[in-house]
Image (cartoon, rainbow, N blue to C red; front, side, top):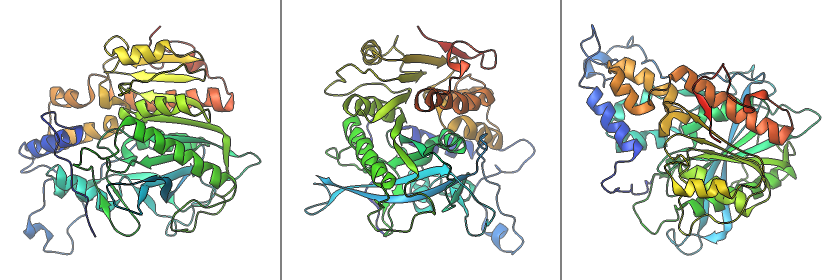
Length: 416
């Protein structure tokens, strides 16, 4: 099993390296009334006996929709895009995962819960950030791998998700599984050379150190559009998996290629905007604090619905975001959660308070990660607003949540 060399970043620490540094620092801070942190590396003596308890995992909030969730990975190769880094005869290679409403998950042994990250990728990530002892603490998702698809008389609307820089497919599992539990098929992408993932042959990929690697927002946008091609194949009854692995029962023919949207966080939000400008198949786009910074810049007008959930890259602070907003000619909405930071619209909003409790962090330390936005409300914002947006524009189910400020979400403001 080989590992792609990890990128050595410049003076600005990535969020992932900062996480490792914070966890490593936290490991030196004992919990109240305890001799060591709850998830510090176990001593060899602690592992000697067979009765050693399994460490408790971090948890993600369960989705609120009426349907159980299924999941299946796909290995995709875009043969229209040669990969110069991989060498002659190689093409752009992606891992993707389809999340969907499931029909039957009673056979729990047959359909195990999916991990937040593939084990090999998780271990590489934790090794990179210097905290390998946390490998057995990672959360599980609510999705059952390989469960049959819930089929009704109508096909499933489809959403494609793009992660941020140096991140991974599972970084916004809260939003993804929420949408799937309400009847959407969501395809998450692991963008080659800027992510942690595992390929079917055992290769473990991590962010590349090669500055020529195709990791710009425009490269992500091309990935989004290629995955839409794969959605069309699935809709037509064809399996796009490069290894022709068996798909869950009912997936072929279940997707609706005429009701597709896209969303992404940070660089993935910028890529979503770029792809929407270029591809009319994206009927609605959502950016989660995307900086909208590209070279060449985003250009052109967009006449389809687009929503921006901003925190750091606001229109007031980011001229590119303001310029993109000004060129939106269709339905548009910009909301901000007061007290939110860049990572507030992702899984860290749920995970970091648990980390803080385990390590006895102060409130100020935790705020450095998720801001002053109440974490419980922050999770509910992630579950409610993307769902309301896509329901409005892909299903034509009007939700008053998007009409204006709601007493249920006092932190959310509507930016005119």
